[in-house]
Image (cartoon, rainbow, N blue to C red; front, side, top):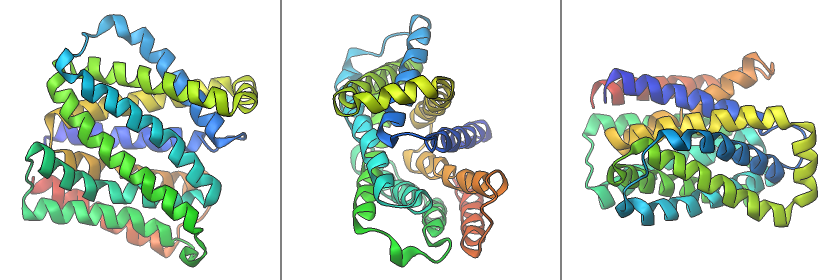
Length: 281
């Protein structure tokens, strides 16, 4: 993995942490997610004339990943309804790199060397260490754990499918743009049936925030689609999950929530994982 790809992935991780922070705006979480993803679709439509259409060979994978992304858009806010953001999010993001590494091995024949694998494991464990922040792990609602793990499975699944699809698409950015248009519209239509009133309130009161979140969402994922097409999926997934560390830094320095021992442990593990996986790739 080259340095420029590494820096792009870290930028995507920061953008991802940013739009997830915006999901915390007042209002129903599913409605907020739907508004943000719809805003991302609208912005993607403006990019559509400037990208090539993905090759028809990639369309089945495109359709599959749109469905998986849509499931993710609902599992994540439901998990937040049952548990704390600081514990649900690390579980969901932390399990993904390990599952992606296995999926990439099975479906794409990608192998990583021993040191890179150690780096990926350190990244995953470092991310999940945030779950213990504040010593409240025993108070996690089992439903929150279930939906967080379901979210993690969605993340791992769409990461592998996106990597395979982008490599077949011919146009990497075209695949990414079509994806963000499709999953945003599908998420919006489902939420419109389920949360029509709540979505109207969110759109009325937080339209600018929704578009800011949508811009960060599509920007982050267009970068990741590119990275998945040119670099090992497991390493991309591991680096991307540093978004949880960015989120912890946001909560510490902007929200003044403190920097506990587990955040320090997490930071050390993530930093070590980044160094090992980057230098041994």
